[in-house]
Image (cartoon, rainbow, N blue to C red):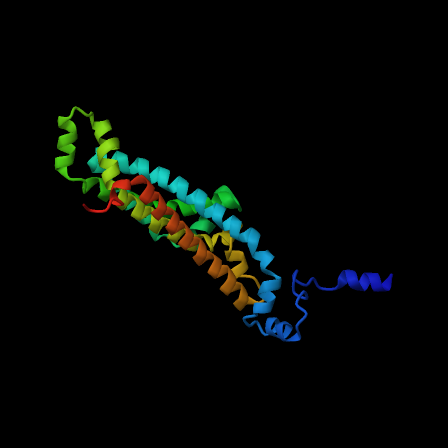
Length: 243
C-alpha cells in the first residue's frame, strides 16, 4: 500500500522522456540541447500536431480565398468600395496575432473556431488586394473585344477578366498560404492544435523548435508548390513554348 501510494504521488514525466536508452542523449535532453536520437524515438509526437496544422491552414486559406474573391468581384464592379475594403482588411492585418486570438476568446471560446476566424481575417488583405489589382490590370482592349463579340458584363468578367487576372490572384494566394502557416503556429494561444504547442513544449525546447519549425517550413513549401501546380493547370497557354 505504501509503495503504491508513493508511485501514485510521483510527479508526472512527459511521455517519451525515458524512451531514449543512450545516456548521452538523456544528458542532451536534460541540458535542453539538440538531440537527434531523442527526435527519432519521439517523432510520433509531431504527427498529430502536423495534421492539425494542415487542417487549420487549409480551412483558413480556403475560406479566406472565397471571401476575398467575392469581395474583389464586388469592388471591381463597384469601384467606390475598393478604398473602404482595403482600409478594413488592412486594419485587421495590423492587429497582432496573439492579441486577436485573445480578443476572440470571450466570443468564440477556445478551440479551432477562434483560430480559424483570426487566420481568415489575416488572409483578406493579401488576397483581396491582388484580386483587385489583377482585374484592373486586364487590358481594356480585351474587355472591349469581348463586348464587341456580344458577351455580357458577367460573361466578360468570368471568361476574360478573371482568367487574365489569374497570375496576380494566385500570387496573392501563395503569399497568404505561406503567411498563414507561420501565423498558425500561434494558434495554441487560442486553444487550437498545430505545431505551435510543440515549439512551446517545456521538454527539450531546442529539438522541438527544430522539428516543429522544420515541419512548418516543409508545409509552406508544399503549399507553394501546390498553388504553382494549380497555376500551370489553370493556365495551359502559359506553358506553351514560343514558336
